[in-house]
Image 1 (cartoon, rainbow, N blue to C red):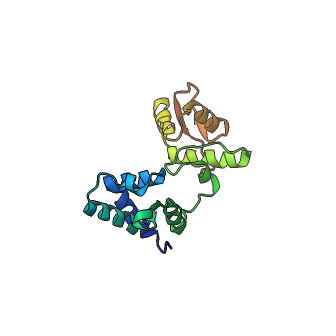
Image 2: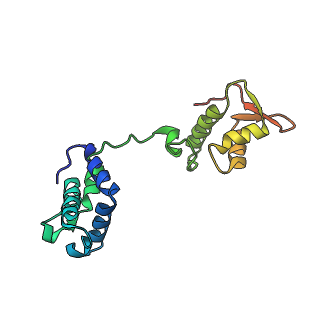
Length: 174
């Protein structure tokens, strides 16, 4: 089957949303015979299930020799446009903006930290430790390490008491 458009996923999802069609596809996938996979279905229901699976490209062959074709998934994915890959410091963040890992190179690490700093605080804004921790928790599970990196890299400053944080004036943020 040739996939010409990424819209071909609709009949596949529709077929898999049908409990009987999904069960027959699964049984064929694990190597059951056609008769065993269609067992218990009336003749009209058998025809409907087979037509649904065939229209979706999930099975090939004659009614007596149906075979599951899981390759339809790879073909649909191949036909879909690739999502653009993030570049720069964004490549270290998940699509939801959470930190996935720290870059090994110092310059990239600083750029990533500057991006994060610019996202969690506005210039001139001063927040207490609880607020900064809440904002950092949206980015990472290890709030203390990220907060320390931001301070050590000169992007955030902390009051003498350590109770409030602000962006360092004129520190580059992304």
